[in-house]
Image 1 (cartoon, rainbow, N blue to C red):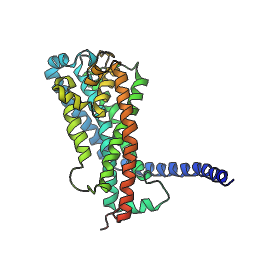
Image 2: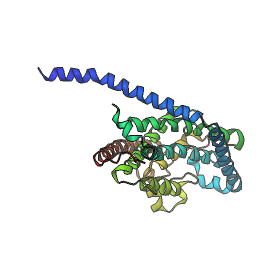
Image 3: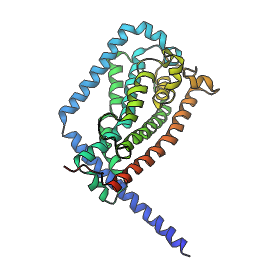
Image 4: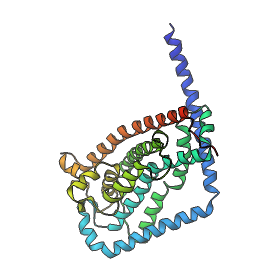
Length: 307
């Protein structure tokens, strides 16, 4: 008798709670949008930065395009500009989701607002998700701007017949990198890393992704042990899958990564399974560690830095 009313009450409370959290996220989104709109000069510099970055790699591509085309291999086509545009554009997505959670939590801590936010009747995750709205406005559109610059000005070419599959891979890429970002953010309170370089972000983005994942060159130019090491991060599978899908000269088949060569499945299936597995492991782990970090800070009284 007593169990049914409790279940009914829980179900009845679910929708109001969800509605409240969504309304709170919307309020954060509006706030971040207004802040983003107030810095018009930053938006102009944002475009200039993308143009200069794209131009830099175009000039490098012009200098080495013959050798670069031979190194790319049939899996990635023979247009180095298309290769590099995909690398640079996707790297923005990955870097944002990986680095932004820690940055947003640090900002709340040093601004003295985290205590106030968590006194409100909202989930401990809602402020973080709300602050990351700025990334959706400021960073995510760079994917399309870099692609447009590459196509219109620098000779990059793309195909869009596999757009739905590419969108599916993009969702997995965003989710898996966000899981790493949450683990990184948890270190702020859980390990008390509030100064200097955050180790998770440095190891994954600053070291492994920069040197091994294949942003600027194919993984095949690396020694074999380093190629295996590159398979430990989502960046490697993201670049491989989206270059195969988007470059008109690329082949969907033909194993490139060591994991693809070791398994008897199509390369895109291996990429999808790897990103899906990383998502299933990293996102729950990141949420768990972040929640524990918040609870630790509550117990210790260190949610906010008081001036």
